[in-house]
Amino acid sequence: MLACASVPPEALTESQAAVRAAEEVGAQSQPQAQYHLQLAQEQIAAAKQKMDGSRRDKQRAEALLHRAKADAELAIAYAQTSQAQREAQDAWAEIEELQQQP
Amino acid sequence: MFRHNFIPSIMPLATALALSGCATQAASQQLTEARVAYQNALTGPAATEVPAKVHEAKVALERAERAHEREAQSRAEQDLAYIAQRKALLAQQEAERRMALRKVETAEQQKAEVLRQQRDSARHDLQTAESSLHALDSELDEARDARTQAEREARDALDSLQRIAAVQAEQDRMVITLSGSVLFETDKAVLLPIARNRLDTVAEALKAQGDDKRIQILGYTDARGSEAYNEKLSRERAEAVREYLTTQGIEADRIEAVGRGEADPIASNDSPEGRANNRRVEIVIENPKTAAR
Image: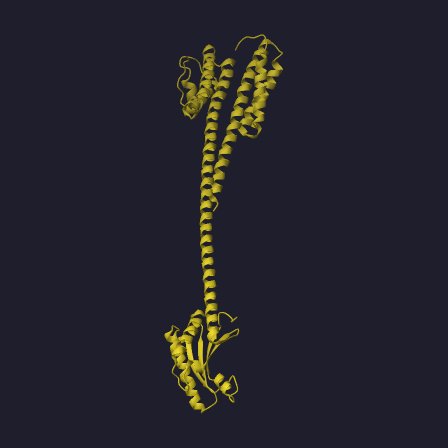
């Protein structure tokens, strides 16, 4: 990790943006998505606490934000995949129903 | 370039830990998990579906490996490995998502095809039904025309008949009365030549009434002479008419001849005119088709 004087602001904004995006695609309703979303939220909260502390704390904060972003992005992926799989299931169920009609 | 051993994803974690590192120290749990996750991504559909995402995961893993080489099990190694593992999992998810979206697309095409087939089938059924309807309409028209034609023929025949005979039509029977003197010589049961023309007209009228109607020929005389004689004469006359009509195409089993003799006079037997009127042949048809006008 780089030795920096302060936590780069984009580290916070990007991780928060990723968390918002995850919430928007419904990560809360999919188990694996929800798990990683929660991790992201917890790590951002922990990072905020350390951001104005010692240099060591700041380093820790930046690392936590990078981790949080990775978790949030994974949460998005889980949510979107689950959605797509549901769509596929629905689409094929619809065809079966159509073919059952006399 | 980074050095690390190939770790098959099927290997248990302990073995994987033992194999990793070569001359270096043991990897952190995060790094081990990151390596496994990357191998899974590499050997799964992600390699072909989302190679860019797999590459990102690889780059992240390489950074973690470099941190591991600098200082085994450091915070840096753990943080970078944590991120690398998430990126490998993400690559796998992206691959699954793309596959699912393709299934949706295929399903939509299939649905369109099914709907198209159902529509074509319905259209075909409709055309078949319409054709049947047309055919039935035509049949109905033909039947109506045939019936109109038959009615017209019956009326025409009746018109002709009324010129040469007295026709009395009731609900359930039609009575054609022909005078004895236009059919037969006096006291004879032999048909006169001119009688045949009239009986031809009668035959046409009877045929126009249809094949199924029963016909009765009744011969009558006046009251002069013995009853026995008159009965015989009237019978023979009725039979003569009957026989002639069968030669004109009336079926024999439809038509019956009866001699009534002096019975049922229609006029008084005291005058010559009355007696002439009583000398007659009646042709009775049951359930006639049309009433006389």
